[in-house]
Image (cartoon, rainbow, N blue to C red):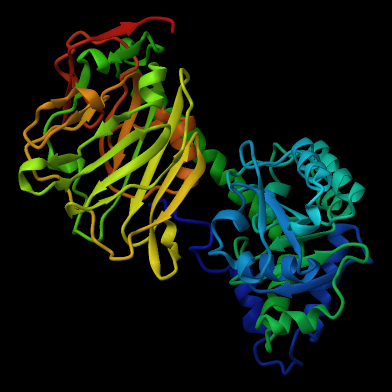
Amino acid sequence: MLYFLNDYSEGAHEKVLQHLIDTNMEQLPGYGTDHYCEEAKEKIKKACGCEDAEVFLLTGGTQTNQIVIDTMLQPYEGVVAAQTGHVSTHEAGAIEFTGHKVLTLPEKNGKICAADLKNLIETFYGDENHEHMVFPGMVYISHPTEYGTLYTKKELTELSAVCKEYKIPLFMDGARLIYGLVSKETDVTLQDIAKLCDVFYIGGTKAGALCGEAVVFTGDSMPKHFLTRVKQHGALLAKGRLTGVQFDALFTDGLGMEMARHADSEADRIIREANQIEKNFRATRRTEDFLPVAAELLVNGKNGGYIDFGVHPEYSSFGEQGQQAFTVEFWVKLTDVDEYLNSFVFLLSTFTDDDTKDHERKGWAVNSHFGRLRMTYGIGYSDLFEPGFSFSTLNQWVHVAVVTNENGVDGEVRDGIPVMTKIYVNGQLMLSERGRDDRLPYTPNDKEVAMVAFTGLSATANRIGEKSTNGCMRHLHIWKSAKTQAEIQHLMDTPESVTGSESDLVCGWTLNKTVSDNNNIKDLTGKFSARLIGDFQWVENR
């Protein structure tokens, strides 16, 4: 059995454990002053080719990121990081908790570039009001990145040059550094990192230790009284030997590198075997199943066209009421400018508003309202929850993803109320909105009403033509889980990777090539069928 949960789900390397056992009965001074800690630090400095470095041993990655950033920044400074950086997305606001803002930059495959960094800093100092703003005081990168990508020596050199120009430190998160150093695809050595970064750390938690991260300060970058400030953060181990003994083992006889090479080799093997399985699978499929996009589906909603996905409770019900979590994501291109900007139109909907029952509102709808992209939730009688933001992209394909979790998307709670909705456009977070103060739950649609695109339906399944629009849609997926930003970006970049066998996939349609039966377009799961109604056309080469 192979487990892909994470790389710290296992225990420690047996030689690390043995070293802990062998030294267990020794009486040693505390707080990292024992000789094992000192020996480990010396071995690390030697490996870095930086004898004048300062090395400090901490226990975990988030802890290390928070302490390094907090101690190296002035109170009015923030840290620059990729939008997908760990400190930006997956550390529960640990950096912000210290009073420092994370200033995000666009990324490409998890990496930031020197040009974007320089532009951010120049724009900041070019603003006459910058003294009233958060200063960019440090640059944070991860290597390997959150996507597993690696910086080249050229990229690191360019980033380092910008940081030196503006006299701000370059900080590398090396939680998985050891795997990157032995990769066949890297030209970066540990010595290069020590020369180009002001501070970095070598991860132990994810690399054969029970816990531990070795922070390396190069030059004179280590903050004054760093040990004292570590203790202020509650992170100073009394039994410092715990990390010292482990890193002493990892840096003895190249154990850490040996283990990393084995891990990389196993990863390569799994990829090869997976590729072979895919190759064998494709050999059993019809050639036409893998043809490139033949046409775009253009639906003229203003002239009576729409997509009918059928009546199925699964489209709008995702578990116990008040505990529901789901994601709606698709590619869309709206082609009618006036209608889109100047009215209320549905893009995709299971929503109904029954006038005969005091506006009984149920289901959900992704819609546009006078140039705002919104998600509308029915929450019973007369009540709505409609988070949205200004959005006017027209006549071009955009990826829209709406993530809902009544218990808080990404576990986020604001002012005691869970963040119920996050909306992403082209993989970027555009809106994060907490639920209503009165905490009324989202109400699934229990009416015999179909899910439709480019129009809306009443409670009795009658068309509402004035809420229609024209456009194209493809790669529609509904998930009974709240996807993370990284997952959404992956779905955006590789929509073809969705096969229909995913356990949390409710339904999914490709809608990107002509079909022989427009009244029976099967979804990826094989459970559902869609129909094209009224005015539509398959348009080639658009």
